[in-house]
Amino acid sequence: MYYVLIVGPAGSGKSTLTSSLAEWIESYGMSVARVNFDPAAETLPYVPDVDVRRYIKARDLMIRKGLGPNSALVASVDMLANYVNDIRREIDEIRANYAIVDMPGQLEIIAFRRLGPIIVSELVRGYKAASVFLVDARLASSPSSAFSMLLLALSTLYRLKLPQIIAVNKIDLVISIAPTRGTPKAAMEELFLFKILSDEFSCMEAGVKSMFINSDVSVDICNTLREVYSDAVPISAKERVGIDGLYGLIQRVVAGGENFLTEEPGGF
Ligand SMILES: Nc1nc2c(ncn2[C@@H]2O[C@H](COP(=O)(O)OP(=O)(O)OP(=O)(O)O)[C@@H](O)[C@H]2O)c(=O)[nH]1
Ligand SMILES: [Mg+2]
Figure (cartoon, rainbow, N blue to C red):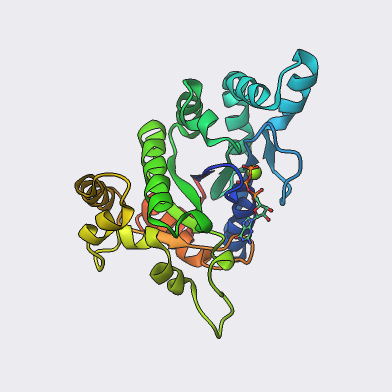
């Protein structure tokens, strides 16, 4: 089994992608465990096979302890540390080819608080795992937001220490994805984030365009980002566009590009 953790800022499309990626993988004959790891989720666009709300619900903590929504989520993720082994066991029992984990809405709680990375490493211990970091396409178009999203992804990488794939989601909101009028490829030409990572575009130009910070600093950051990230993949989780490209990258990271079923027939 391979773990794929879907992370990203609030509202970036993690739950929607969990649903569409799982369906895509299943349509190719592989099995998937859909794991809701968000104790604050109210409704989900998929039926979870494993659901952390069975152990902790943020809403219950709000009522029982009189907490606000943010502190209830913080407390509930901290409390999940006590249940990681149970959750792992539940996932193991499904014996799926992939476990897709829909991480909590607030990135900060899983990536930047003390227990988040400990919970994540315990969850995936012993398995190959990758994370997909989602960026909303509307935050990938201007230089300042594109730099800040890539730096957020980088700081998440530092904390979670899992191979990371950057997916720019909701491209349907910034480009036409109608088959006759454009493809996900077109997103790459329109969105600055792809230019930062593309060797066809000079970091010099990226630096000048970001203006606010000393341009030498931006050029250095651009070069550093290119050393860490060779690519990003444009997708629309909602319209199910680009999921094949995303799966290809996931497969490359966790299975060295080999199709899962041909590599490990038993699923384990
Ligand atoms: N247009 C468009 N909307 C999308 C896409 N993916 C997700 N959305 C919408 O964005 C909103 C948030 O999507 P979710 O999947 O709930 O995002 P999330 O990251 O799980 O949200 P939280 O868990 O609350 O942080 C919903 O209204 C989705 O329908 C997409 O590819 N295109
Ligand atoms: Mg969600």
